[in-house]
Length: 169
Image (tube, rainbow, N blue to C red; front, side, top):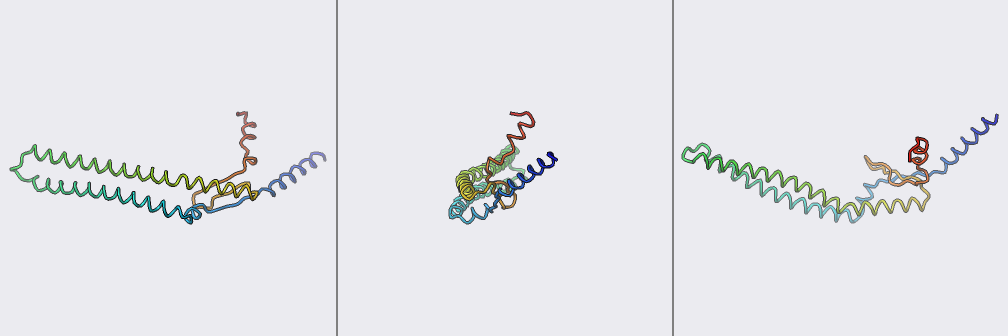
């Protein structure tokens, strides 16, 4: 009888504790898109993208021009083989440069995006955490597609208990 009573008390305490845990959700993507900084960041990223596109278009045009010049002399028997080889090598080098520029542009875009968005994301996360704490929420879930937990009250973290049970430090 004592065991049944003890189990009943534990179950009631668990239900009461769970009933007091508040969970909220927010669509962080929608929030960020509604912020004025998002438009500014978007415009800056668009300028960077356009700059790289212009550089790549210029390099591609140069490559195409030299390729067309090579095609004009490739079947011409009056042009020496060594000149044809030099022109072919020049086009191959231009193609490599183009590919390297594509990678550099992609890397630069990613770094610029990261440097602009990281402070914004941090500000949003800090604000969500402050609002959650002020309103007594233990957890805030992100309802954006592909997202997860934004904030959690560390007092509900099971990690120390599970590590102790497993004998881990």
